[in-house]
Image 1: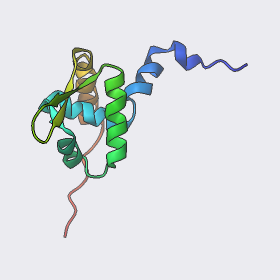
Image 2: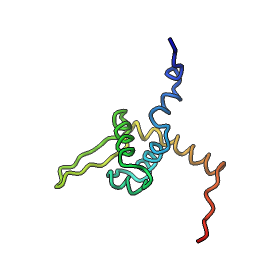
Image 3: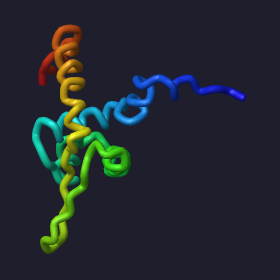
Image 4: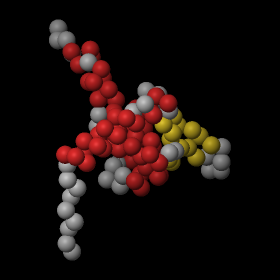
Length: 112
């Protein structure tokens, strides 16, 4: 029998939920910009497939980090909102931004 020791590590468990690039960026946008419709998020991340966006949002919703609010308009529409639990990740995102500003460089502008 193999024991998965990552189950005992809160960092590993957190990364299982929010540790991929797209999920962190979705959270960044929802925290900084407020509620967003699926289409808004698609426009913000044109390189992300709709299936990937849908999967990431469902995972965040299942874990209570994001809430999907449906409005009874015609046609019906929904938007995604960060919950209180999700807002607790704000300092984590801030720390990532500060670290990135200090230790990474933006890409050089390309000449046409």
